[in-house]
Length: 206
Length: 159
Image (cartoon, rainbow over all chains, first blue to last red; front, side, top):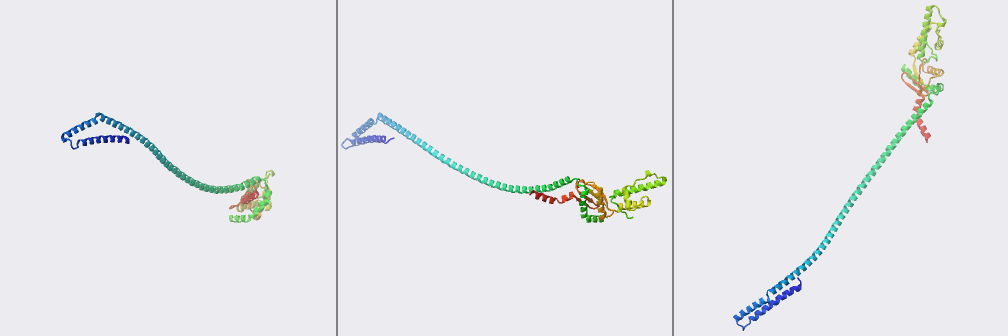
């Protein structure tokens, strides 16, 4: 309801009340016959009241009030609709902002978690790399040592084998090609060199 | 009897062979005395080994007593003389063998007896085995003994 409507209703009621009061005071003035006059005035007032506030007037007032009420209801509905739209818009904005903020916070947490996980993974990988590197160095040292030992062993075996091969080759090359007459000096020299031992052995055997 | 062994008598086999030959001679003379008729064609031949042995010791093989002495002396040598086993890479020539036997008779024992063996694997030199010990005087043993020297020579040659 707007202000103009209220002022109109209040003005109408005030005018009716003022007219009623004026009539009542005029009727009650001195000089008139108190009993008869008074009863006549009251009857006239009742008639006038009935005349002024008759059914049409009341219906008119009711219609005006209904219209005014409908108008007010319509305006309020409009206001309510506007408020509702505004509220909805604000709510949407608020929800959007909240959702965005929440999502951003979650994304931040998520990013932080990913960063932490990444850091942990990087640390783990670095530790693994360090361990692997140490292991590799240890294995490398061990392999070098073993390879050296194996190489030395193979060389020793080769040298031993080489001596054996050369000896075998020389013996095979000599075979029985050298006549005993050619070896005689060597044999006699060897016998001479072992003479004492042979003599000693024979004496012991005897 | 002091027996002088010839260089042809190398080892126990020659001694045994000579003893057997002396026994054969004894049998022959006993048989011929019993028959009273000696056949020149039937006379046993004396080997060079026994002949040299008899000559070296001044033995007349026609006399039974001297033959008996020789036989006893040979058996005594077979029993008492040191017996050595010597191996060569190949069969020694008689001349070389005589020198080796001579060395043993001059340096070890005058009645030394040698058994000759063959070991082609020794290539050269000899291996002497007495009753208690083995003397490896072969080239094979020398090469084995000086293996390190050979290796050092090879190493030096490869540098």
